[in-house]
Image (tube, rainbow, N blue to C red; front, side, top):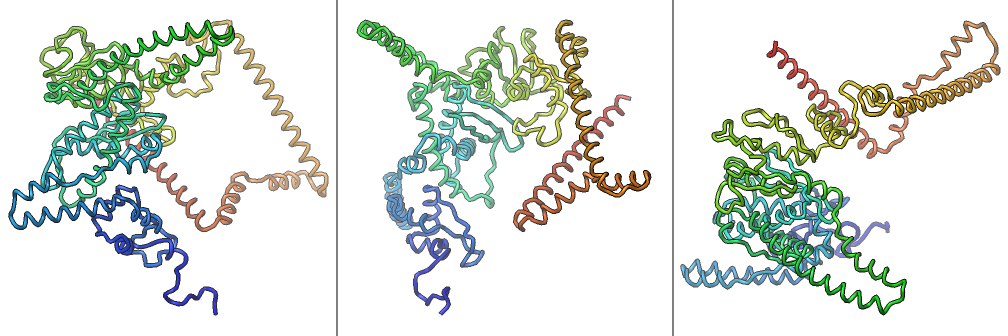
Length: 591
């Protein structure tokens, strides 16, 4: 009997024993598809792709251990009990007993997902690392309208708005924001918390239209239910790390005027003052206790004890990026006009050290304040103009944040077409195309840091010429003479090395030629030229040989990489061609 033969009905082997289809999982758990999908979202279980699909390609497969993981979780019984309870509500509505149905809805059991959050994220860094989708979905539902048709409740929208503002207030308070980019989809933000980079997308502050056919809102609401619990845990932990009570208690007047972020910043200030007073009291008590202990310890011990006291303070020092972001808009006061995106600017300006106000109730200062340095406007003309401030478009704020310097405001004045808004998430050097405005920002940053960059059309080697540096005024005459001597010495050594290398090559060729039969000088020269290898041909042959020796999978991957490089090069060539056309059109208009 062959080894692979197994009688029917016996134990399964291989993928058939390790994987089950979705229909088999439903039978195993005794739940419907909707409940099974909700369980998978709560537990973080996704379909798997076995190497060999034993039931065909049209099935969805799950690992058997994942199904067993769901089966033994208490959340399964809680969801079954809730679905049974909702059947009572449906029955009361069918009997047109509205009072009983409303009473049952008010008393329906609530499922707590706290245990699942702790189970899926045993460490806080794991939760921070998985916040991208959480923040994007919470900010999305915070901007959506509440509708009964899509089962989006008002309470849920308010909760999402509260959680998103708490997160933004922490980021702005601790100056953890790093990048901002405005796109057609919305506004991209990137922050760095606990050493992890978190990127999320927020929709524009416009009226949102809910599509009916393309989106399954039940799945989104299930994800949102878990993400709300996760973000509440994260906000609590972050607020606790900076000694601020959670949840915050906000001013009702500011909440009514839709200024939750400013209300949260005031709450931060109040709690920080309280915590500083407590810290000062504790510091005085610790210093008194330390002075008492120093008399009891030997002469070499107090120094070590002082190091123990200073240790925690050194651990909470800010990194270089945070210090740089904190000082970007320092000593600047901004006033926002009515037409600009207020929520985004109220978030990003304080995150980089600026003071901001707006037109409305609860504003910290009014438009007539003479200490305002910049007013953000987005209309072609301005009625009343204050000469003590600059009027700029909102893009100037975001470009300054991405460049980490204060850019000149001439290109962003009212009524002008601003420069292109460049994405900070794109590496121009890696893409192979550097826009002109990116070069301008690079030179402005170098000038702000007193760095030396080559002029347009010149290479980096021009900076090594001491005469050029002396003419530009970067170095003195004595330093230029010393640099010229060092450069001359290096050129001499390099020439000597090349001469020695040339002599070695000539000796090798002469020794190989002595072994061969001597012929006429003309024939000898021709043979030597033929024996010289073509380096390009050798490189092509080596590449072809390595490609032949590759496996089919690696060869396909190699060809895909080559196609990607060619596609990127074609895209760069297209951008350069468009740029040339635009430049020619501008020159034609000037002429």
